[in-house]
Length: 338
Image 1 (cartoon, rainbow, N blue to C red):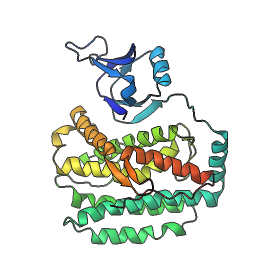
Image 2: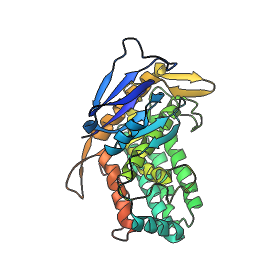
Image 3: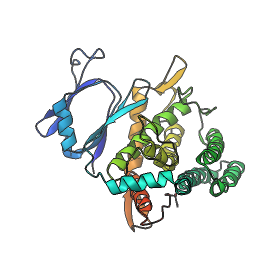
C-alpha cells in the first residue's frame, strides 16, 4: 500500500536514482541543517506529499513525480491550503465532462446530488453522536433536533435552501463537541483564523480531508472543478469540497475526539499568536499520525464483500458518483453502518 509523506520542515527534495532524497535546511533556507537527517524514500511506496514547510525542488523532480503518479499538496505557514502539483490527468474523458456539466446545468438533477451529499454527511454526524450516547454522553436532545432537520433535506428545492439546513445541522452537531471532548471548549466555529484548539484541529483536519478527496477524484474520470453542492468557482476544486462533507465526520472528527480524549494532543501542542490558534509542528505530527492510522483501518464493505480501507472508501465514493452522472447507477452516499 502506498503511503502519504508529510514534510513539516524546510528542505530540498530531489531525485536520487529511483528514490527521492529529502534534506532538511535551516529556517532561512540558506544552508543544510547541521546533523541533518537525510531521508531516502522509494518512489514505489509514495502516493503523495503534504508540504507544510518551504520546499526547494527543480523541474526534473516534478517530471519524475509526474511519471510516477505522485502528487504534492502545499500549505502555507498558517495551514491554509495553497495548491497542488498533480500528475498528468491520464483518465480524461470528454463523455464524463459533458455528463457532469449536464447534471450541474439541470437544477433538478443538481439538487438531487447535492441533497445526497448532505444526507450522507448528516447521517454520519448523527452516527458519531449515537456512538458517544451509548457511552454515557447524553446526546438525545441534539440528535432529535438533527434528525428533524435531516427530514427537511428532500423538501429543499434550491442549493441555497439546502445549505441553510446543512448549516443548522452542523451547528447543533458542533454543540455536542463540548459533551464529547473532555478538556477543551468548542465555542463558536471559527475558520479564518481558528480561535481555539478544537477549531484549529477542525480546520487543519478538514483541509487534509479536502486534499484526500481531491487526490481520489484525480484517480477517476471525474472533473474536480464541476460540483453540485458547493458552487464551482475560480481557483478551487469544488467537487472535493462536496465529497469531503461525507467523510469529515467519519475520518476527521473521530480522529479529533480520539487525540484529545486520550490526551495525545494537549495545550502544549498549539501556538497562539495574532488572534490565531494553530497546531505547532509537534502537534501536527501527532495528528497526521493518528489520521494515517485511521485511513489505513479497514471495514468489511457490504457491497464488495471484502475489507477496504477508509482511504479507499473515498475513491469508491467517486466511482459511485461517476456512475450516477453517466446514468449507470443511482448515487447513494456512504453511511456508517456500525
